[in-house]
Amino acid sequence: MVRATRTIGPNWDMTIIDDPLEWTFEQIENRKLPAMIERAGYPGIAADLDLNKIAEVLPALKKRAFEMYEEGERLTGHKGLPLEYTPNWPPSSSRVPNWKGEGSGGSPPPHAVRD
Image 1 (cartoon, rainbow, N blue to C red):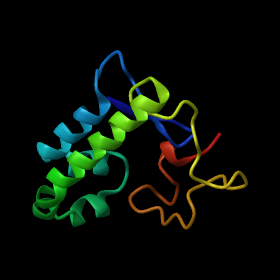
Image 2: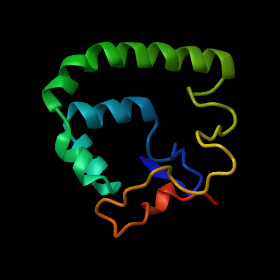
Image 3: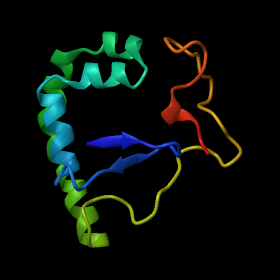
Image 4: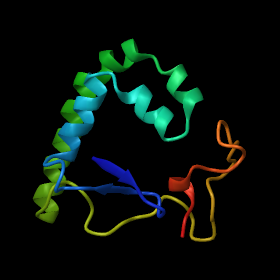
């Protein structure tokens, strides 16, 4: 299970899911991605997904993802995640840039707010 955190990053709960990358691909292969994206607060994006295109590119994507995962484990000694959290926003940013607030009353979803 992946839980969004207030610091914008996945929090892999290794007590529930042994292999988070495999779990992620299982969700995509079982066509659960739209429901996950909608639950995250992005119903417009979920509605626009082309599930046939995703299924078409998934084998190559999965192959490459597992190659990268194995390389990360080789370099760090643990399952494919960085040793330290690396934010994807500049330090001065406190909210998702250009947030439109679709489906949430104008505020970003709780997982998109930095501490």
